[in-house]
Length: 206
Image (cartoon, rainbow, N blue to C red; front, top):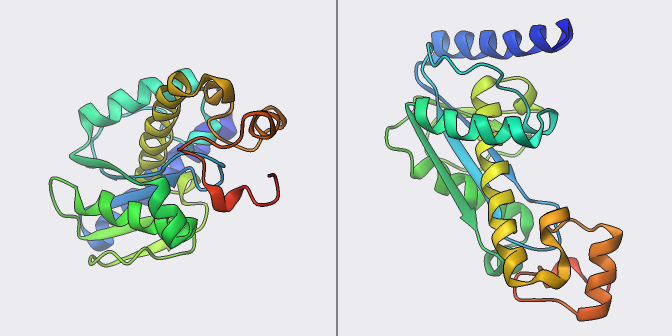
């Protein structure tokens, strides 16, 4: 691991320490799956105590799949509270993907086993949770708590897409997790959409 990575990860821990000092119990929130052409959108909320002892928390996109899987289990074992929630394909179609992602975030925060004093949300859009808090642009690379949420949301959604791959093998969801790759687009044109495709996302393809 290079010095830049170590410095960034320590800065993320320090950021959370400063936020706890100012606000009390903090919760990190992030989502996964806004961009794909298929599947539910996922969100997670995580409350970590100061001495959580989880090593290597980082933006889920900067971690290998193997490392994310290991951290997924460790976060759930060591977090003071966590919740993983979804908004369905049907809800995405009714609400639009942005509002569905906000709904999944609200569900994740509402499902926590204990209440935070302050909520840190990745991105620039507040999801409308009742608690006080703020949005943090590039939060999954700024806050260890948001990074933990990003890992839970990403791994949970990837596992869900593997289950869907078994149901709809012709689309190879296990490879692209529903994103609009060339292979996925070709499969859509050959087989048409399946029940977990977001039809509003397919207008330029089909």
